[in-house]
Length: 368
Image (cartoon, rainbow, N blue to C red; front, side, top):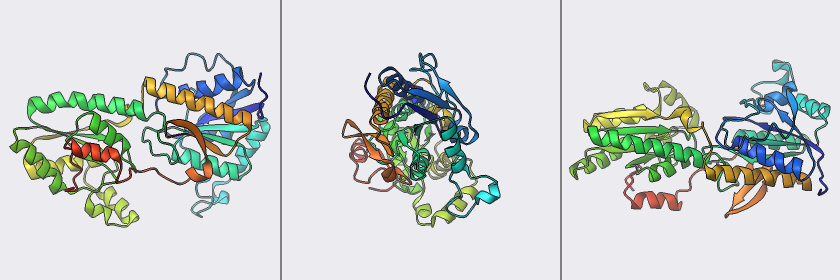
C-alpha cells in the first residue's frame, strides 16, 4: 500500500446539491481507503457539521452503491463560517461564537489531518480561508452553473444541461402546436453557461444571459421576424440572472433594489410580459427551478466526479493542500484555492459558444 501523508481526513458537501456529489464522495473514499489506507470521517450538513461537531466514520459500506444516486449522502447546508467576520457586518461577539475556531476544535477533536470539501464558489472560498487559518484543505468543484474559476468544467453542469435540454425539447411541441412563445427560465445568477449550452442544445431562438444585457425591443423584433418568415412560435431561454441594458447601467445595490421591486416573481415572467406586450403573441413561462439540480447524474458527470474524487485522494496522499482539483485543457490538475476564492467564471464575450449560437441564428437581445 503506497505511503500517504494523511492518515485520517474529513469530507463534507456544502452549498446547493447537484448530480455527481455522491459519485465524487465515492471516488475520494474508494481511492483514499482502498489504495492509500486512510480513515474517512463524514461531516454532516456541510460546514455547519464542522461547527457543531456532527460527524461519523465512514466504512466501505457507506460509500458503496452510491455512484448513481442524486443528492448527497452527507447532507448539505449553506453555512458560511466567515460571513461577517472580516467585513464588520456581524461580529463574533454578536453571534456569540467564533465559528472558525469551533471548526478547528472539531478538526482537532476528530483527529483529522485534512479536510476535503465539495462545493461551489462560496464553499471553495471558505476552504481557502480555512487554509489561511492553518488547516489542510482540498476542494472539489461542483455546481450546475459551471462558474467556478480555475476549472474548465464542474461536475453537475452536464447533468443540468441534459435536464434543461430535455425540458426545452418538450416545450417545442407545445409551442409549435399552439403558436406560442415559450419562455423557460434556468438557473444561473451570475453566469449564463447553463442557459447558453442548453439553449444551443435545445434550439433556443432567444438566449438571455447575465453577460449580455438585453433590449426587450431587440428580442421582440427577432420574434416578429420569425413570425414574418412563417414561424409562429419561439423558444426563449432565460438565465435567472439575465438583465436589461437599463439594469446593467445601475450600480449593483440599485440594481438589486430595482429587481426586488419588480412586479414579477422572476425574470422569466418579466421577459414573457415584455414579449407579449410588444408582439401580441401568446407567451407562457416555465421556471425549471430545482428540477435542474436533482436526480441521477449523467454518465459524463459520473466519470468527471469520480476522476475529480480520485485526484483529491492523490493530493491527500502527497500532502498537497490548499488546492482545488480542476480540469484544464482536458487534463486533470489542481489550482491553488487562493486563485479560486472570491472569483466567478463568467462567459467571455469572445467565447466560441457565443459565436456558435449566433451562427445558428440565436438572438441575445443585443442587436449584434
